[in-house]
Length: 281
Image (cartoon, rainbow, N blue to C red; front, side):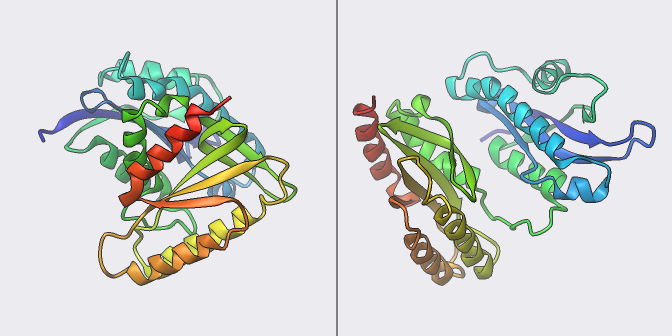
């Protein structure tokens, strides 16, 4: 595959305009030739607050939620393959200002930068890891991210014309709330959670499964009727296979209705969801 041009721009939290000190908190990326538009933000605000003690975590989280919501119509264009912006700096800036307006708030965009890539989505993941997540405390070192695993499953859903019916949905219980990016309702909510276990160490694999066990167990008391779909990426080498098998057993202990699909069963998962969609109401 020949290399395609991409453009990217970093979202920053600038606490003091005079000192101009900042923390990178998001990344917007476009590669029209490969039909890729991506936008992601920091999953937590702890590092921002530690760096700038006067920063208000609640306000930053609200701003990032708004930015994510504003980006969604643009991200849908990559699915529909229509109306994608090109890689010119002014086109990306126009998109960026639609996501986070240009004003005197603490959220500011960097200059646009460009590059070439054989795999635009993989390049975005690497850039996001290096520019935004690099100094996150406790950040898991992925060989593949959850988003990369999701793309394996989303491709089969696109072929079966189900992808466009997915939406975000948040499940709330007394002690926990979880927002699922990919959900479908047909009486009950069918909630998809892509999980990469293709991680740098065996300990990271089992630790990630344990965190999911704890988080999803807290949703058991929710009033929402739901079924969980764990869409799992397996480690690519032999090194993590024993930990991977243990991680699957840990997910199996989650006390909610659930099903676990490895990437090798992506077509089976798609067929299952097609049946769910056919009976949706």
